[in-house]
Structures are given as structure tokens and as C-alpha cells.
Length: 635
Figure 1 (spheres, rainbow, N blue to C red):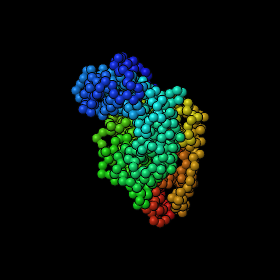
Figure 2: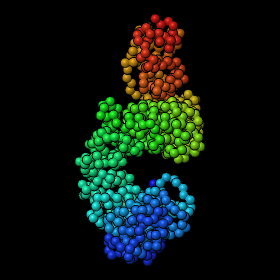
Figure 3: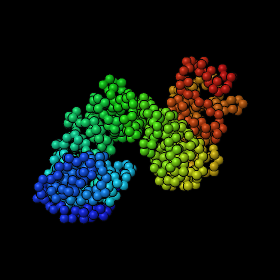
Figure 4: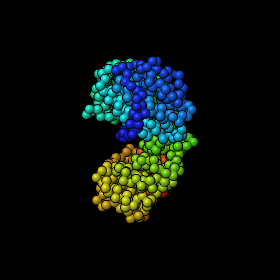
């Protein structure tokens, strides 16, 4: 994506120089012809043909011809044709003529040219695609991106547009606004931003906008991060009064995404659009539409049966069921998979079938090279957050990250999320944690307090000592953020400090921070479950000497401490569903059991909920406990 602060380079002057003497003024704003009949660009099949015809026809091109040229250029961008060493010069002449004549464009021509230029820039600047030196797209990218043509061209378009915005019809105004969103430009115009001016103009004629116009305008405002509560409120009122059956799936998805992203999530519009989508065939929706809709509801914290579990027949087409029921997810791009998983995890929606579908697909891919770091991070985080371990997914992600060799492209949050997710589900591959550690250490000053706490906790669970990471530098980073940690973060750091005691590393937090961490850890609330009361009741019925809810020296609280006459002590942990992921101990569970055994030197016995639920009476329950405790004297 273009840098919205891109400087005004020499490309602007160069374009004017290329066109000096070529583009004489027309017959005032809206001139539609110059000297005779203009070129017929519709006959062109390639970029080279288009640029050549435009260069030969500069003297006869009308404003509408210029707009037509820019409208056609992005459509032909993938069909470049033969190489032309003079292509850059030809395109430069058209740029210069466009800029010199822009002040005389009618609203339609200005919007059309602006949209065509924006689409062209968006295409050639997308991703990290490399072009050959003689590739036409290389010349286009160099003209617009490398030589900073984007900023001056769109500044010129903005200056030409603001004085005539009242003349724009809905479609043309929408296209103009959308074009600035594509290149993420929001220049200052007379003491206020261009999008403030756009917003005022759009609100006046919102009632004439169709579904695509509305969708594009909202999307553009979000892309340039322009706050405009009035525009979003008025647009919401217009949309709820329209027939939603006329909206295309992508328009519905973009509208929801825009409202959610802008923090202007109106429950009424989410409810109205949600009701419409639920009643509509989801086969009409592309994967990107489905993932964006799910993401929008989750990000906006708006609940609707479109996401929530429901067995009501009329809600049978909700997104989770639909995706889980697809034959294949081959049409889903990495971002679609990532956003969908993230949405369901964030919304707290339990949908094992959906996560299995996504997990099996990701695990079955030949490689994860097409996944960006954020997408990998979000997938791992979502599975862990949702309590879906899927070992094959975590092995796939872990192997990929460990084998990359260089993790420079991962930002601090992405590194933190992957480590936290793997530890949470109990995937403690030492190769992964060893591969990530040096990169974390090299970016330590970039991590926020939550990431620092998550990483410390994750390595404590994985039990992977890294002297190159957890040293005085890490302690210093923790100490400098001591006022920022949440209660949960402080509790995580207490477990990390316990881990350092396990390792006998000699690494310690400052005394005051240690005390805060321990207080946060021991002050966490606890509640007795029916399952726990049942187990403790059977232990008491057996006549055993025990204490309930015992706070140990480590700071851990155990459900019951059974004492035997020979001095033996056993901690009995009644482990409900929260302590497991797919019936495998969660990271928090293994960490507690390990640290209690090593630091408090107390044997730990776990009573998993599913084993206990299978026992039908006191006799079988006490026999089960006798075996668990290794005690044959229980009566």
C-alpha cells in the first residue's frame, strides 16, 4: 500500500516538462473535443498499444478521451503486449497533459480519470511483486510510485474537484471518493481535510446513492482513517430504508466491514443486514465476503444468529455451518481463513466443525508460503483462543516458522501470539521456541507489556530455557513497563519467576514487582464446582485426612491436599473442561502441575472430568480414587 505521506518528488516537474506545449487549453470546463475526432481507445488490446495511440493523439484528445484512456489502462494492465523502450516517455506525456487540462474537466471526466489512475496505482503497487526491467508494469510502477507521481496528481485532482463537488452526480462522486481511498490519500484543502469536504457533499445527496455507491464511499472513508460520524449515521439510515435484496454480497460485506472498522457500529444496521443475509443463500457469497462479514460482527462485538450457534431451522444457513459444510476450502485465500477463524474465536462462538474444516485444510496444504505473518499468527491465536488444539495445524505452523530461518517479517505481536498460542494448546516444540527467541530478543524494545508477559508465560509452559532471551535485558524491559501490566499479565510474570526458580537461573524481577506479581496471582478468584464438591465429598467419605482449597508456598491454590500417616502429601486437582483442550491438558494445566511438583515438592494427582462422569456410584468413585492415590487402605 502506498505511503500516504509520500513526498513530492521531481516526477511532477518531469511530467510537466514532457508535455510542455502539447496540451493547450480546451473550450472551458467540460470541453469534449480538441482538433477533430479523438482516438478510439477501444481498439487497443495492450498497454503498449494504448500508450502509443494516446501519445500520437495528444493534440486531438478531448477531456473525455483522456478520461477514457485512464479508465482503460488498469483493464489492460495484465495484457502488456510487446516491450516498448519508449513507454515511460509516452505515459509521461499523457500524465503531463492530464495534469495541465484537469482544471477544465467536467465532474464525470474528473471522476473517471481519478478512478482509473487510482486503480492503476493500486495494481502495480500491490504486494511485493517484482517486474522485469522491460516490463510495462515496471515502467508504470516507477512513474507513479518510485518517482512520487501519486501525491501531486491526486493533490491536483483534489484542487480541481472541491470547487465543483455540488455538480457531481452520485455515481461520479462515489467514484471520486473511492479513488482517493484506493491510494489512501486525504490531503488538506483550505484548512480541512479533503474527506471532510467529501463527507459534506455526500450527505447532501445520499438519498440518490445506490448500493455500490454507498459501499464504496464507506470503504474509502475507512481506508484513509477519516472520522465522520454524521456520514455513517446518515448512511445507516439510508441503508435500513432500502430494499436489501438489491445489494450484492460484496456490497453488504463491505458496508458491515466499514461500519465495524470505523467504530460506528450501529446495532440496528447490523441487525437489519444480518437478518437479510440469514434469509439469503450463502452460495452467492464469495469466501472474502463471508470472512469479512464474520469479522465485522466479531470486531464490532455485535451478536446475531448469523454467527451464534442456533438450531432454529430458519437460521440453518449461518456462516459457520455453511463453511463447515463446503466440500473444499480451496477457494479461500489465507486472509479469508485467518479472518474467519479469528472472528469465531473473538466472538466466543463454539463451532468445532468449522475449526476442524479450517484446520484440516491448513494442515493439508503443501506449504504455508502464501500466508503472511499476520495470517499465520491469527490462525494459531484463534485455534488456541477457541480451545481447538488440532495438533496437525500447530505442527504445520510451528514447522513453517522454525524452518523460515529469518523471521524479520514478523512483528512483535505476531511473534507473541504464535508463542502464546502454541503454549496454550500444549504444543511445546523446542525447535519453534528456539527459532523465535533470537528475533524476540532483537526487537525487545518494540514489545508492549502484554506481549512481554505472554512470551514469558509461553516459554515457562514450554520449559525452553533461553539465556539469550531471558536475561537482564528482558528483566529491564519488564521493569520499565511495571505500571502497565494488567492483573493477568502480573500473574503470568509470577509463573515466569517461578520458572526461573525451577531453572535456578538467578534471574529475578525487582523485589517490588515480584510482590505485585505474587499478589495478583494469589488474589485471583476461585469457585467450587459441583464436580469438585463431588470428588471432595467422596474423599471425605473415605475417611481421608484432607484440606480444601489450600494455598501453597508457590502461590498456587489446589483443590484438595490429602495427607497420609507416613508424611506423604498428595495434591488432588479436579480438572474440568477448562483445564483441557480436546481432552489434552492445556498449557496452564501442565504448568501448574509441573511447578507444584517441583517447587512445592508435592505429588499431583489429576481427576479429569470425563473419567469422573463415567463413574456411576460411590463404590466405583472411591475405587477410582484409591487407584489414583495409590492407596489400598481406603475403606
